[in-house]
Length: 246
Image 1 (tube, rainbow, N blue to C red):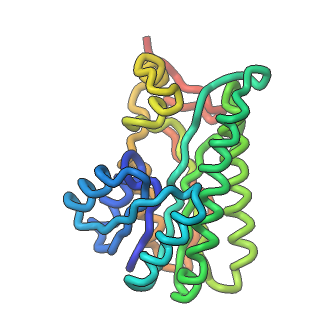
Image 2 (image 1 turned 90 degrees about the vertical axis):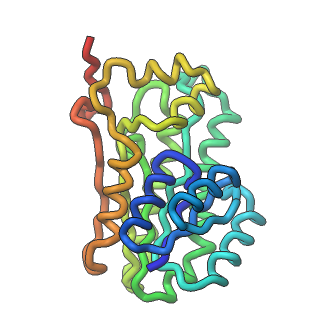
């Protein structure tokens, strides 16, 4: 079985490459950073393609390279991210556009471009790594919440439109995950603000936790569709807030 994983250079994407390779999958990691992809490929034996999923030409070249090497049985749409944590009246519209381009439009582009190859297998899966932000809003998160809600709608619509093709369409929606880059990117490299996100939170999820859920969902018998799985650490309440121990 062969899978394409976007956003594979770090965090959940890199952990997913490792988890699928460990289960015997042939995996292609896709991301912008060639050095990190090369290191992951050397570690795991996965292959990789350097590509920016927000660029039409990059996506077309990536899909041509991937499909020329063989069938594709699964696409893991993991690439995404948040920028800023401002209230609506303080919104950085350029940042909101960038989040929408990456989380929603980029995901559409990759899915659309790989769909013919996926459908040709007659037993393919498209998995979306969304977020609890795709299910409920939180203060300061509107730009990211809007982008992730759009991605979730895309997921549901794809499932409806291609049910006749036996295409599995899966959503994995993580809550608080402590990765090396998500919050650091969100706050423009401000390490203190990034660290404060996790301060006092006992055992936030790890990238490996989410990757295990992804790999499990993809390795179930094909007639089993994990429509939506929300993952949260015990310290995170359903409303999205987290318990912080003093």
